[in-house]
Length: 57
Image 1 (cartoon, rainbow, N blue to C red):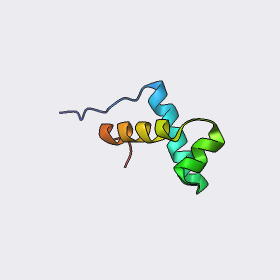
Image 2 (cartoon, helix red, strand yellow):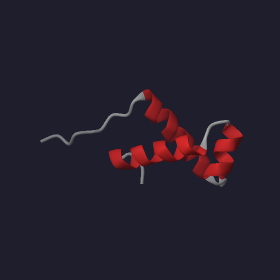
Image 3 (tube, rainbow, N blue to C red):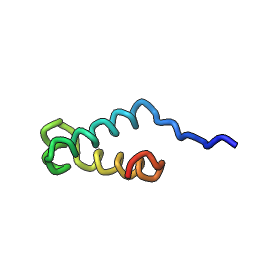
């Protein structure tokens, strides 16, 4: 039986890339979001969605 692989939407991939870039930058999520021009709430919300989908740990 094949394992179901969850697929990410384009928007979810966008946020995953930003979350990974945030971690690589060494900045806090607040600092990173401010520097990128979006709300930290959007970053946290997206991270939680990705965690629930099993796409981020």
